[in-house]
Length: 277
Ligand code: ATR
Image (tube, helix red, strand yellow):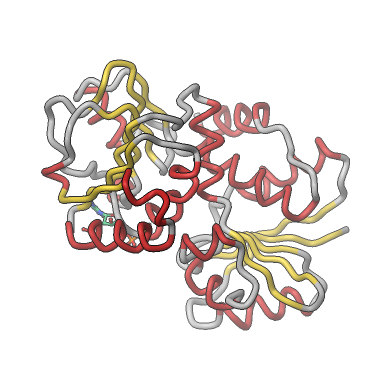
């Protein structure tokens, strides 16, 4: 069968094999999808070996997305170029190609949840790779305003400037600042900080952050509501979601790149959620 894998370090707990195998069954495609642990200092060699041995495609996860971007530098999608990171690699006509499906995955999940970004005021918390990777799809989905706030304010300001530079048509709806100047009345607040992994929610202002009917969305997921989701509930967010749906949707977008067919995600997400509990 065609061989695919997710590459990262650590990788043992990745759900990607289960997700891609479920999509493949659904679409009647025979494939093998493995977990590939790359030593931190030989990512490029591990990728080269995989494709040399006939591998068809790789998903890339922490901490290699920026290195994958470098490897595919001469054949990047627009999404990948703006994200500065690659989560999907494949060979075509002898060249390594890279795309980033995290942003479109988030977008699909927001729509699934009934919170289409079109015309909405969105607060993006965090200014690292995870935040950067989702800005273009949110802007292109027509969000009314996109504000980036970060613990280190300068990083948010720099990110705003970089995105405004790359997408000048959207510059007027962008703003940035420190966590303490997060503003009020947001329709969607997205947590793209890595603090949740250590049990921490970002230090956002308590009052007025969430508009009526707002969604608090955490890009990480877990078997329990995340620290950010718990904080959002006490701060008055009506709706909360974790990033499991984004994981499944980004996988679906990668699957479409490789196989030319976009799988249905609903049942796969439900099964994954049941396994987490
Ligand atoms: P990633 O690629 O996952 O985004 P990163 O580039 O290391 O990883 O960025 C991590 C993000 O989480 C940053 O925005 C970071 O804030 P700083 O730029 O100030 O470091 C944010 N972050 C991590 N821990 C946090 C915490 N406890 N509170 C608030 N923000 C936090």
